[in-house]
Image (cartoon, rainbow, N blue to C red; front, side):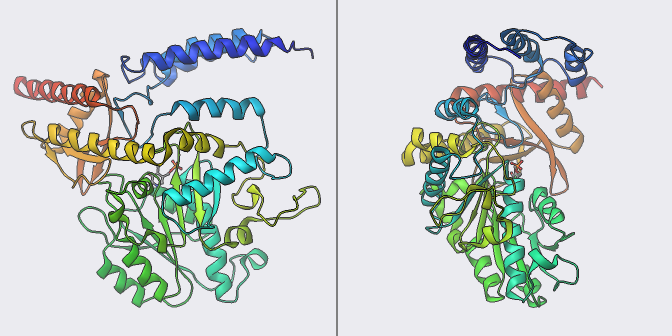
Length: 467
Ligand SMILES: *Cc1c(COP(=O)(O)O)cnc(C)c1O
């Protein structure tokens, strides 16, 4: 096979032009895609090509043909799920990661990316106020960051009860009690399932979805043997934070390991205004977060942070002859995550933190919260609209009367296309959820979004009157 080196120049020139067209269209384009998956499959499906296509044409055609089916998730008017945009330095660094094509698993094999990821990890630990020297691993997302931290927890709590899970597995092991709040994210259940724990023991939560300390006390009084407590920083519907320090201290009295899922909410710790809501955060043993959410790096990037040095390596580390170690005592990147080979996804984190600096991260996080509050205030003052949560962070849950009305407004809004917000249900009611996680959301986006919701509401109410 013969490929001219200059083909890269042509392919990248096409990609750069198409990428810039896309990014420049974000402030004004509708958020929703105009084509669904069926239409997109029709566009792309053909028999497996028998012969080659010139590389620049492949890139150009796919970028052009895909556009109708691309949701503008990086738009300032996108408030679906919790997704986040992309900072310029992070995107540029991500392109370099692809161009370098490093296997980021080993220090010896890729000194620059190992150093960049290590520094990015140290900066994160500093920024979030977590214990110095914590181990940091870069995973695909918070699901696997939860998994990584909980794998370390599993090995540690069983080891403390005289059981080596690496050699003996789980069969016949002492029973590990895993406590979770009633409103933990479903990815925590997934991580526990992947670890062989089955369904965890649920502790009641309060109206904002925070774990209740009195219920936690009751649950702990029943526990004998190994214990893991999973807490949450940032509830999907309310944005609320569990009383982390207090809950952690209680679990520690029972010899437990305390893990915090802070996929988007951990970033509140980078804001001096919000940080008091996370009091005692540093007293947990492990944390999971997503850089692809609040920090606005491109997909994918989760972060698993564990303060008990060596605990992740004890659970996930390995040694074979061909995995050559460098001379240092430091763990290799593959010791801190489930994968061996992987993308250098910590490098865009380095770039994002370098671009923003401490003050920039603070401004980013506070800006998201301000926009969420402005949206809640403006939407909450529309007739018959209820804001169901206390807006302490980036999440706003809204209802528009009955569940049917709320669902109808949500459907109408998505059809309108100017903004995107997700439907969900919370506390037994259908809701429309607004999740602010894009650095670019500004007051113009807030105004346009309020206008779009008002339009949808008017349309639904007008329809209801006619019917
Ligand atoms: C998004 C999210 C997760 C899962 O993260 P992924 O990056 O999708 O794997 C876990 N917990 C919370 C609270 C989340 O918001």
